[in-house]
Length: 406
Image (cartoon, rainbow, N blue to C red; front, side, top):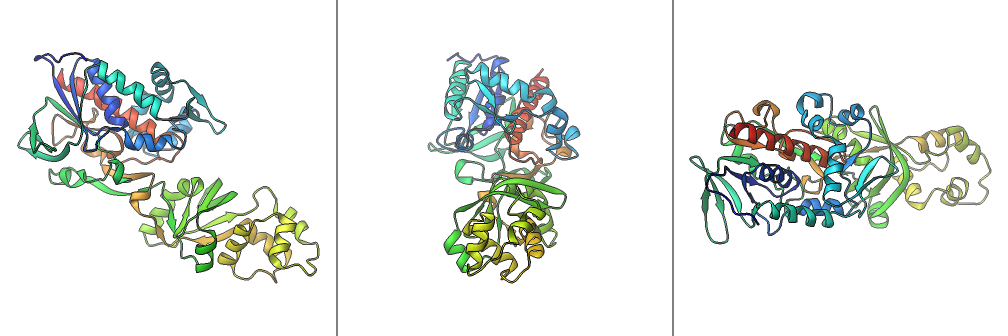
């Protein structure tokens, strides 16, 4: 580890997730004396959790549709992604010895499909650059211009030349991002949009039969539609509602309507591989003495979970003719009653508003204090877009700190 010179500028980074670690690397490479403070016993905990699903780093789609994933205001709010692109993120990963590949859906993963090898290599690089990591340090705000922390050894104060806040959003609190920073910033007059679940599940008022028999089972190869969005994939029936990729993709629109106290009914295509005419043809064969469930299993290959969901959402369909039943199977209405707990959401929307930071990601009301990552008020679907924005805003904020100090 390199020794820090007394003439070096000192940087405090609060939060040891992807944004904090990336900013630390850039600042230490530029010769800054960087210290990361994290209130957990280790860094990168949510990053490692993301790696359990294969660590989807970014996405390979063309840049214009890529940016549209962040919403209509993205080009103005997230120019950082134009300055640290998915291609640059892949190169950074490979420079750490972790080759990447593009999956069949266009998502980008490290070849190891794990976060731990990448994180180990990254921490070795940070150590070689002289970055100090102070664990079990819980940030409690400011004492005049000094940062205050509680530690196992007691309270401490730190007065760096610049500070980067990278404390994450408000989901998966046990991994570190508990959203407690919102009150600290509000007390300083910083506008913070309320943190809300994003890429989340939803509650459904299931019958006891569905809860007891099918909770924890996937509904495979379906298509979900809501508003003008139609998303294929697998969804999961939970004891309290629904989860899964297509649900997360629709979560922003569903959540916004629920928050506005509007009814939120999505539609499920239980047989996306068959046209309505094909379903009608298969249902025109006589049922004979078969039960309705057996008939649907044999004629359409519907599994028990789909048949019970049909009963749950449409009632007794056994007397329906082929035409009406085909329409129901292609657009089964499912009303969600609420958004699942924010702590179980993959990410959160809301946070420090973009109007409250300057072009260098510095808080206008608190010179020398910068913000990056999921603390900022942006939202994106899963598919690599979340991590990409965290990395890109960290690069932008780190470069902003360098400009500020010069």
